[in-house]
Length: 64
Image (cartoon, rainbow, N blue to C red; front, side):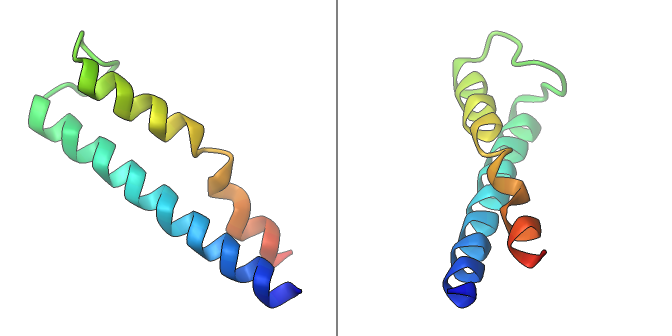
């Protein structure tokens, strides 16, 4: 059971990092460092990233 938990925690952690990298890349392309500056694509990326914040603690929770 612990192996399966660790596997899913690892996968969720990798997905979370990927989503954060996509949002960061979009920020670099648009030059918007705070907020979303009226850019709908960046706003969507920010919402995706905020939905994965609880998933970011999954690897740490599985380890303890």
